[in-house]
Structure formats: C-alpha cells, structure tokens
Length: 207
Image 1 (cartoon, rainbow, N blue to C red):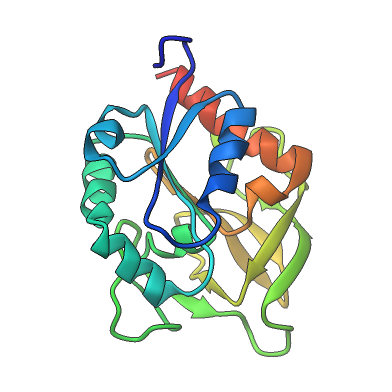
Image 2 (tube, helix red, strand yellow; image 1 turned 45 degrees about the vertical axis):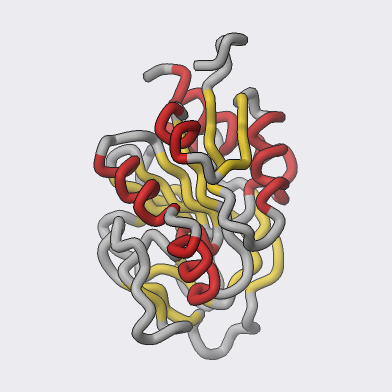
C-alpha cells in the first residue's frame, strides 16, 4: 500500500502502445498506479497490470527485451494479483496463430486463435459480457457493454469466466487464482470498464 493507503499497481512499461491510458484508468479507480519497468517497484507493488495493443509477436519481443517477461512470471508464481488487458491477455497464453513459433508467457494453458470465419475482423465495437462463472473481478458486470478491438482471442477453456457473442461465443475474460486476462479495453469502456478496474483495486485492498 502507498502512504495514502491506496493499493500500488505497477503497469508494466515495455514501450508498446498507449500504456499510459491503463495507468490513468487505474488511478481513476483508486489505485496508486505507476507505469514502470523498474524491477524494484514492480516487486513492491500490490498488483501488476500488463496492457497491450497491436500484434502478438512485437509485443512479446518488446516484453522480453525489457526483461519484463521474467517479472511477470515471478509475480504470478508468487501469487501477486495480475491483470492482462487485450494483447496483454493474449500474451498470458502459450502462443498465438498470429505468430507461429513465437511463444507466449505460458501462464495460461492453450493458444490464441483467429476469430471465426464469417465475422468482420477485427471485432471493433461494443459488445455485451456474459459472465459464465462468478468472480470478484466481474462483480456487477454481467451483461455489461464493453469495448473490443481484436482479431484473435484465446481458446475457450475451463479458465474462461466470461464470453461475448461474435459469430459464436468468444473468450472475453479468463482467470486462474490471482491471474486474470480481459480481451476488451476497460480503460475505453466508460463506467463499466472503470467498475472492472475498481474491482481489481478492491481485490488488492482486501489482501
């Protein structure tokens, strides 16, 4: 916790995309959020967030180049609450069809697949969440409208806790232990996205 009593969140800064928007969203949700690549700060944080936009391969390369893949794995192994957003969620998996041969963090089993044939790719729209398994991160969010921008999504598995309908069910949120991934952008999803970030901050405050 910070001196002000707010949970400290390290937003992993690996130099790709508008990572600061996630930091600002977390600040609005009540966190003491820092966009950082400093291992010392990351290891002191109450929770970690891995945002991402763009493509799987360059995001993984940048994360590894900043040595933040090791920090991510260490935190998850130690049970530190960890939230991946958009490509940040996809990087939690073993790999992606978008980049054959490029391995992900392997923190969740399975791979990321292209959205099904017959739908427009990318999905770039608001869509409704269907919560399939209650979770503190998703409190008050069943049926919420949130904003997606993606052409790939994780395979639906026992870790999937929420989906959206886009030519069939698409993995929108996955979780195991204190690790979560969301395919949509909470920082672009208005009040509902702020609620999700607030739920994450509340989880940190209760630990």
